[in-house]
Amino acid sequence: MAGIIDALVGISQFLPEIKKPEKEVTFKNKLLWTLIALLIFFVLANIRLLGLDTMSQSVQQIMFAQTLLASEMGTLITAGIGPIVMASIFLQLFSGAKLIKLDLGSQEGRAKFQQLQKLLAIILCFVEGFIYVASGLLAPMNGFLGIPSFGWTILLTLQIAIGSLILLYLDEIVSKYGIGSGVSLFIAAGVTGALFWSVFLPPIDSITNPALATGGMLWRTFTTGDPTLLLPVVGVIAIFLVVVFAEGMHVNIPITMGHRGTGGRYPVKFLYVSNMPVILAMALFMNVRLWALFVAKVPILGQLMDGLSWAVQIPNIGGLSLFHGLILQGLTQSTLISIAQAVIFLVLLIIACIVFGWFWVQMGNQSTQAVAGQLERAGMQIPGFRRDKRVIEKVLERYIPPITILGSIFVALLSGLGDFVLAGVTSGTGILLTVGIIYRFYEEIAKTQQEFLSKIVGNLA
Image (cartoon, rainbow, N blue to C red; front, side):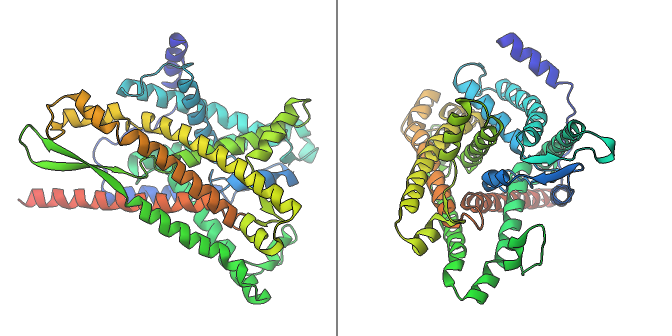
């Protein structure tokens, strides 16, 4: 297996790559590159696929993950960042099952992981592009310009793959020359745009989408006089406040510089795992439903996948969120089934987030061993103990693993419960991710500006 991994890593060396900046990128240029990437993303989201005839009604089954994967069905970014996220999921699962042996605690191991992830993501761009068409979600034209249906299928697959490939390299550009992560940027942009239009969209006479005629939540509230239509807005505000509060929660571990050095504290945030476990879990759920549609006609396997697809589907009642539907309909047989589905969905989401949270900590160089090594190399030690990496690890073991699990459960609960309140209007998971992403963008901008000011002061001195 080691030989195969080395061979794949060798192949990845021939893939196009965004070079790292030779000198430090200024804050102005970082902001410029971030805005350029965002502009390209919105342009791609408005370029329709050439050769697309219609979209199946089944596409509604995966719409819940559209904003989470920065995708727009029927456009060049139909698959969005799905291949990038799925590549990470596959490699994490293979690594956890010991099918791939990589030391994620070492720089070399993480570098190999990232190279394998990029290679697999590129392959999945084409695989997922084909599945979107072959599953019947996107119906190609037949006979148009003398090209048979199969020819348009190949063309649609290539367009979807190219769109995801562009996002893959835009993510590299933002990570190296911009602010934060391109993946996070695209998710936040998609969720923010969807939320804005779901609230403020005026009524539009549309033949292709009759639902637009009713307008957004604000317009429907004024025309119907039903204040319950604004419940999702209250839910959005509640999630925003909870996430901002949770972002400020942390545990301070006492440390000192040297044997009798200055004392300090190492903060371990409650949201130590960030929001990545939710992104990975929701991407996995979406792909389960996508594959369920793909193998729907296969005996036994199709039925098993259909049942699993039902379990990972966000429940709704008559197109309304679970919470809103319960208020209007009360406890009926259909609503009780939806509640059971919600419980199963939430349990699976929590389990998935815990698993992915643990993997993310290992991959992100945030494990107990990695942090202990960083503190030791920086000359830090725990007050009252001799300077020893094993001592630091023992103290960190009391905090990092429990906080990793608790943080993963917290984001899973907030995401799932938010979806139960906001489904049908926007995504609770999307709002959770967007608030966290914007908060980290703010921290990144503040950090960049502080470093810039410190350099100016240093030069003047």
